[in-house]
Length: 431
Image (cartoon, rainbow, N blue to C red; front, top):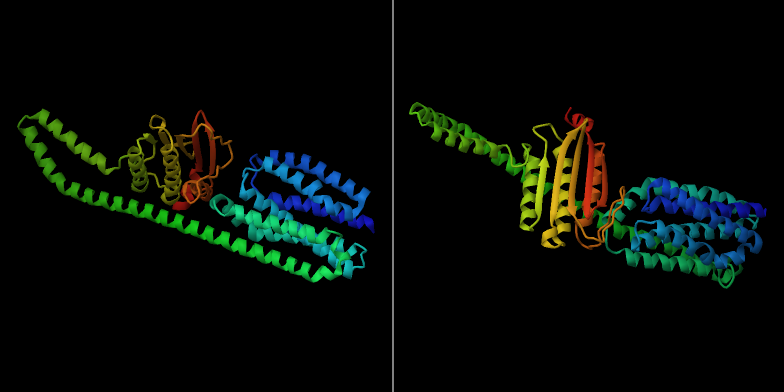
């Protein structure tokens, strides 16, 4: 029955890998990540299986931290986009959950399965896919959102999970395997119970931070919509006033033309034309979007930034809620970035135009010389307690709601945010 033991160990190693890959964020595209992971971890799993066959479970159980945990930690640290507390917490989470299943199934097989490894094999065969199913259904999406939005607290959480992992590894294998120390089983059982309770407390704390982030984002969006509505109401009042004043303008122009004062009439027409242009918006005729552009144009000018905006949209029916989210968060990030630069390097540009049934958005700003963002990745802020890094996650969500995509990258000393939206999504939203 030793073959069942060896197969169950191989099954565990494969699913530790799967569980971790479900939860962490790679710095490379998916295909490259899978290839790198398959090569490196395949060799590592092969070496550990050879060691298991040659030296047995008890010896490999004592050295698996050196032969498996630390090498895999190094490999994934090199691949991961996060090289801080986020990464270490995710790594320890996956390893601790897997080790918990391994230890529990080993103890159950020893006392209930007669150490024939049949119960161990069946239980591991079922438990790992069950845990992964639960992770996909309940954990993966909010956990990835947590990694995007929550910037603080990861270090202490990673330390706690690393401590539990080491505690579980030591208690289960030193000085001998736990099944050879029945007098220590009650204390070991308490450790097994405390671990999931500790994780529950950690996730509750992280989830409260996520709810706080969502609340702050909602309040920000509401404030932007309120400002847009106020500008729209102001425009409507000015339009009514303009209509009322048109009779006076017509009478004045008629009088000037009748008196042959054509030059004065031309000057008066320019004044009226400028007043009408102001009604249609400084940057575009959509009052909601114009409010956002006007607001950030003013803030950028106050920050001493060279701001250039090329907004080629008219009175099209646009999903202004999502677009306001995209523009406000993108421009807020750009504003925050250029504030940290020398005055002569503070440059921001925004471009919006239609092309082949797509709305193309590009926000570009000068950035730090040491900032490098590969195309297809989303940078994470290093400024704790600030909204700066949260904006890109909101932009991405808003783009996805409109069947669009968001791309970030750096080139020639600039950080570039590109958003491509399908116009089909606009028509669906207005039908």
